[in-house]
Amino acid sequence: MDQPSNYNFRGSLIIGLILVVVGTVFLLDNFDVIYIGEPISRFWPLLVVALGLARVAQAETAWERRRGFFWTFIGLWLLVSVLHMFELNFHNSWPILLIGLGINSIWKAITPQPECRLSKG
Image 1 (cartoon, rainbow, N blue to C red):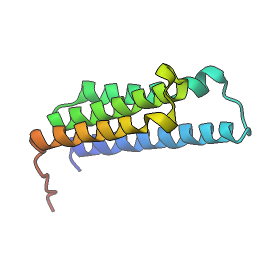
Image 2 (image 1 turned 135 degrees about the vertical axis):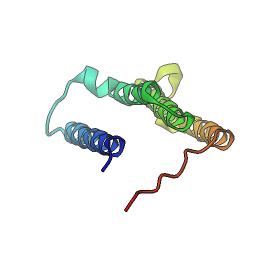
Image 3 (image 1 turned 180 degrees about the vertical axis):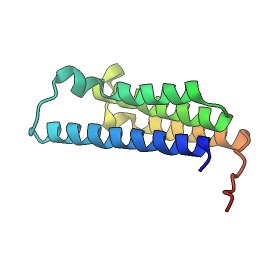
Image 4 (image 1 turned 30 degrees about the horizontal axis):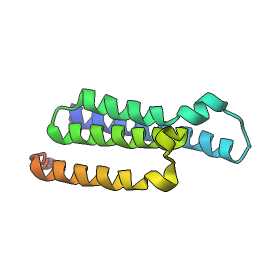
């Protein structure tokens, strides 16, 4: 396996494991099995925003940058909904997701797609 593929595999594996652990902790908090505290339970969407911004910062292509911005958008929507900013919550802010998906689709259509990588062997 060449270096970039191995690096991407390890990065995805680590991020996946972190998301599973964080999701499990929040689920246990929701079921009152553990208590993680008010600030963490309210500001968890900042983790998604940070993930998106990290992807934007590390992006080497327009496609990767678009994915980073999309994760940042999702995190900001979650933050606004959880904190009830501008009197928005999950019930009345879901159309913002449709707008974001539409912008993402338009951006995808007007930017070149990454080249297909064929594995050797």
